Image 1 (cartoon, rainbow over the protein chains, first blue to last red):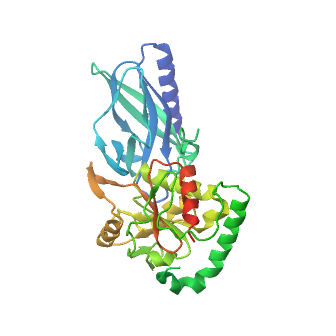
Image 2: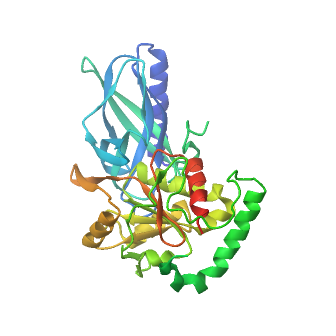
Image 3: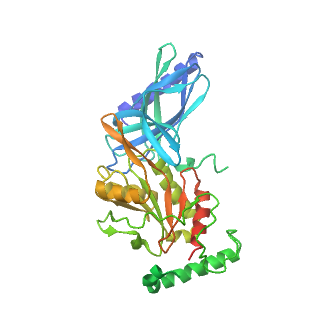
Length: 158
Length: 216
């Protein structure tokens, strides 16, 4: 582990402590993960669940492993998958909003290298509240296999 | 037995009889709940529980593309196998990896019957998907999977053959793709049989794929 990674982890830890200390804190990021790539593959996706305690929106995500990070929306109609960038994702108060392979997701484009299963990818998530206040959350997202691992077909198998 | 079958009879005969035997045993044991197989199902339509019956559709018969070794392939290259054709691109974050992972899982669920299932991933993004990346990508899901590519024009012809919709969507200084997410399944004689929607689970796909295998 590099010094930078240590620092990032420490920052994330402090951020969590900060959240605990201030009950008024706004957004929680859980179940974050990034899909592994094969070598030469220039982009991947990041997924997570965001829960805001007041009406907010996800405005951006950044990571040192990709040159360009965008938020995309995927939708299915008549078995045609439609994809495109969006400016933000609404986070209504108290509602767990999932960024998963069936809807919104974070596109990591222009990857600086292969993303390998088992690694951690640092993500900086920026959320804006209804009154324009910004919150920055540091997340260490574990890398899952190309198949998204055990979460395949989750919910439909049971 | 149809006329177009005749050329392949000698080659395919041992494989077909092996499969028939295996399936008879399996259904006899009632393991798959498929009911009794009294012989080849020559009916023009099949009853699928989840997917769409495409038995009466004339689609995808004349595609001509290259595999990642650079060899030219057509549908007849897969005679004796059950081709499952899916169009996508490797920079696809959601539906493509999900569909390929589902296919790998369905193949496993089918056990030995899954051996004749041949997943064929056709890139809709030949400008960015090199044969090397394509090969590594599909084989990360299952070593038996194959990827096909062509010039943008050749890919457009193949996509049209299957009624695939696709378009580039600008994304920053690059692009992403919207595209049809259906998997197309042929029987071992090269007749189109089944369309599997992206919403189906691996288990549902496996059940319908076994129904395709009842046709011999």
